[in-house]
Image 1 (cartoon, rainbow, N blue to C red):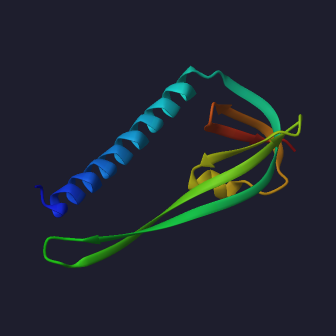
Image 2: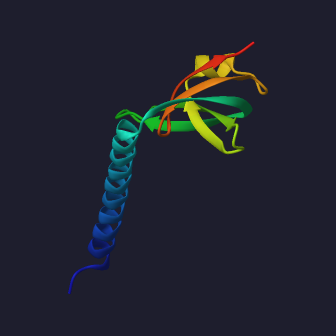
Length: 119
């Protein structure tokens, strides 16, 4: 009769492996959909901005711990039809955009391509 430890080990191992593979497939699928989407430029208004900071704790072979963090920036745009879309943008773009800005938003699927402010 197999030991319960080995059964649990393999269950957890395959659960983690399945989660990693599922996320990989989703990422490649989204990348492919974006590549096959048309590049669009529409008039839009910057509605809101937000950032997501994630902290990572690492430990090297000597047992010394390291902490790092990364920030992901998001901007929500509203187009003339009233629809809103939240797109991930780079840090420099995030800093240049202000809520209420109006201009031409360029995107491809869920991929942000740029925003040209109108005066």
